[in-house]
Image (cartoon, rainbow, N blue to C red):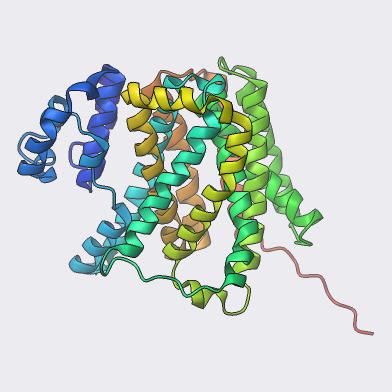
Length: 407
């Protein structure tokens, strides 16, 4: 428990982050901490979530664990208003971008913790991984619909039927990538799943060349050697190694690569970007479609265990709370990541993604007590470093353009 307390900042940028961190802390320490929380909700609402950030600090948070409905569920909307009210820049510093980065990292970090706790409490890979993955998307759908319904929150997109149909390939790949990723994290350690997922550029390169007629420079091909080698080295000493985790993480990489290519095609379609209106709307539409697409697969795979899952959800607060929390974190950090990428250049994106991956792998492993063997850490460093180099190699050594021979 002391390790978890040490990674939770007492002065988070957002009250929701502190509240959810306190709840996660309580669950790691004592799984039944939520059972006595209902009596404290009224007291928290009266004193206001800001009390978690001042005066009592995290001592109050640990003493009064929160229910999901007592936490702030609008990270993106709140951050946007904070940044706009304070001014986008102060003294040459982009306050909004810093807030996006901080909440993106925080959201990704706590998503991995709450997701793993929900999966583990529900029985791991033998439990309900596909059901949990689908319902996480469902939580995101509720949040997206709320923003469209709330006054002055988010403008409805002006999409047509053809626009929705054009979004289906991206949504299908998104649903598959998320489901396979959740299953991989249920079958093995979070750190191992993240290391394997770091090899996504290899899948993107192969897919781009073979199916989408994209050119990949020699420098990028060479950078795939440390990426793949680092993953293999990290797997050698992995105590929680499982073939199912390896295969499903690779499948998640494949569909994530497909998603990236299809999303690029979609955004290059004339007029559709203007009709969707914003990055938030694009992600909301994709999430809603991905949720609808996931339902038939969930029913086919785990539909016979639905009654058992409902009983587990209603009787086990670790499952119910962390499922809802992970759904909110997943939606929030993905939307924030997209907004961050739009405000930065290629080098900044690469550095940010590399740093995020390292923070998640090491931080979550420490909190959840996963193995951090020196060989595993070395493989992680080589693999993640290779990913970073892959992202910037063409900027360091620009590939030579082939001369076209005119007839």
